[in-house]
Length: 147
Length: 388
Image 1 (cartoon, each protein chain N blue to C red):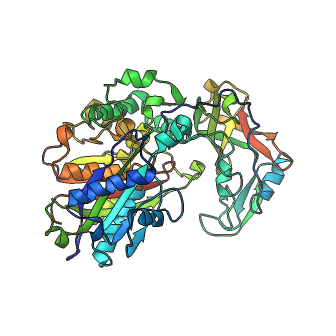
Image 2: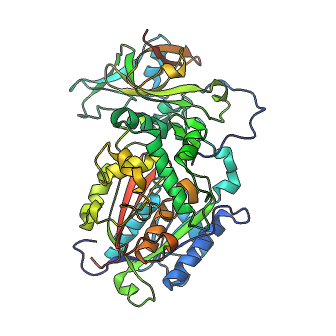
Image 3: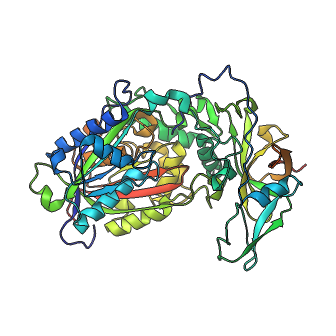
């Protein structure tokens, strides 16, 4: 796929709600915790490294992993401001910030930085999680600037 | 390849189909057009083919093409690692030819992406699967362009790379496209044109992005022994390698400034017994300007972080130190979805002295490097005009 096009034929269609995750056996604990306002990461019982998304074992040492609560704080590793997306779930949000956030505990996750002007976001900006419920099964971990 | 006696794998025929807009052709017809032309270029026919490879978006894609083309090969491959697939298929074909399991391999690509889906493809912004591993990056409205923009932003942050430097890559590709009568866009472009084109996903502008095209390409491979009986100039496969760093989740890419090319590039050079300084002409995947910049660093043409200054001053242009994408690339000439085969075609034409106005005089070593997914996969093919 490639990029020099622009979305067409969809201008008249109504906005759709943003997609909600469908928990599977491996992700269910992660999404269940979001409903309680907690951000979980997997931590290795052998080397202590934390990771997301969930795997059966630690990707660094293949040790056993367990879910632990993260602080919800991190900083922006990189970001982009999406200015074109024909998707009916996101078109009405343009311009919006998609970012990769490095959590204090180590794992990196993709998210949106919300509650600020996109121009306020920089690489390295400290951010904090804020949950937005999107279904009975999940709330999305969005991030806002640490003020 | 290096250290091999006998059964040296060579490319003996290459061709593209017509491009960039083929409203009157089906996807399979595009494959067939490229295949017929590549076989004719080699002086061979479908009856000589006993190995076949292609990559498409559905399982058993190669099997369907065999049925359509009337082939019943004893060796088949349809490894799909995105845009880098065709460098991998050529690597696999080289190994199969060396092993003696087939004599003549046909590799084809065809797409009518532009005519079929048109610009609805846009930025590739649909949500992915909402369960399983790929769900983690699928929920945020990121786009394909957005993923590459994340890499570009990080590269700018770490190394001071500028939008002007990225734009110069697009400008150089357009200059090459001006000499390619089939290229989708041929009008001259300036850095200012790129920077004033619409931002799609900061910091990438529309003109930092590849075009959307119809088109196909093909190559024919055999052994040097068989090639000696043909009326063609063989191009030798000196070395090849491929790898992956992540799939749809760019959050799982350890360092957004370093691609899979940093691992498969050096390995391919080692296998070929040559290095970056030996390369006369480069055909590199240019889905976006940042793809080129990071790949140049990762393949070792300059140090990590120095890609920005490296591309300045027309270094990638014909007449520069490292002529790159001499057909105009995916940024200006043709990008039908998985461009990897076009890289091989242009590399071979350069080594045979058949590249037209953009011929690099005396080109003897060429590299074709494909990138697939969201900087997810890389595959390097080192080619030469001299028997190793």
